[in-house]
Each structure stands twice: as structure tokens, then as C-alpha cells.
Length: 167
Image (cartoon, rainbow, N blue to C red; front, side):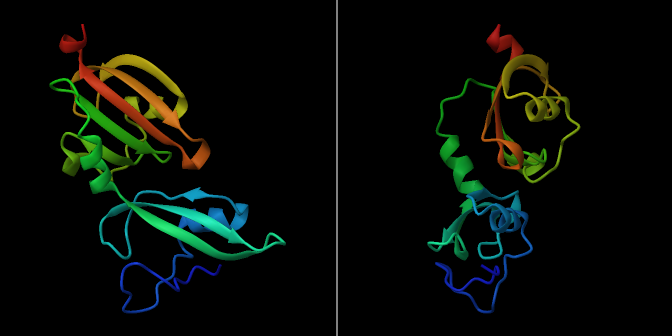
């Protein structure tokens, strides 16, 4: 409950604390499942979003936290098995406007905060919808987008299809 890792699937060479992570602080405060922000995993060294679950005793006191890092590169590879039209793109964005997953060109966008981009701003303020706009790569596309979850733990997903393909 203090954030110090006492067991890990990955060998630890020194003590590690997760108490400074926002997802952990939210979990301790709310005693509820928590989803983290984009980060580089302290164990994996890879782009990660941590999922945390509280372990409570019969009085509701926090006694431990289960945490699992979701490897964003691996998730992106899995998502790319979806058959998208030629020239389409896929964006997964957290509630801070940070790009978690991007296809194509993940190296250009993943991990970057882009809350002022029109597409990202729209995704952050509206739960779902469709629009034709210029996207992160400056090309006009028809976008469909949807929010999963709520508040700081929401994930925003969009798929953009080139306007000439869509119409």
C-alpha cells in the first residue's frame, strides 16, 4: 500500500517504488481500479500504461495493489491485425491528449502530448462522433471516434480514412 514493489514477474535488482505515479495515487485515494498515463515502464523500459487494482481487507483498508503494465508496442501490433483501408490511420489517446498508439508512423507520434490538435481536442471533449478534418499528419480524412471509460482514465480511439477513399 505504500507503493514499494514486493513481488514482480520481472526480476528486480533493487527496490522500486510506484508511489509517485498518478495512477497509484488515484488508486490509494479512491480504492478503485485505476488506469495510468503513458509512461516508460520502470521494469520493461517500454512505452506502457499501468493497470492497478486495490486489494482491500474486510474493513476496506488497502493492504496491497496488483499492477500490470500494458505494453503499448505489443498492443499496437495486435490492433494492426485489423483490416484497415489503404491510407487509414488509427489513434489511441489518453485523457491528457498523449498519443498512446498510432498507426502508421508510431515513432512520430507515440508518447507526444497533442491536446491542442483539433482532432485530439475534439476527441477529448466529445464522447463519440464523426467528422472530416485534417489529422495529425496534415491529410484530410473522415474520422470516427469513440471514448471508452471516463474522466482521467478515459481512452479515446479514432480511425481516419482518407476522404477520397471514404467518399
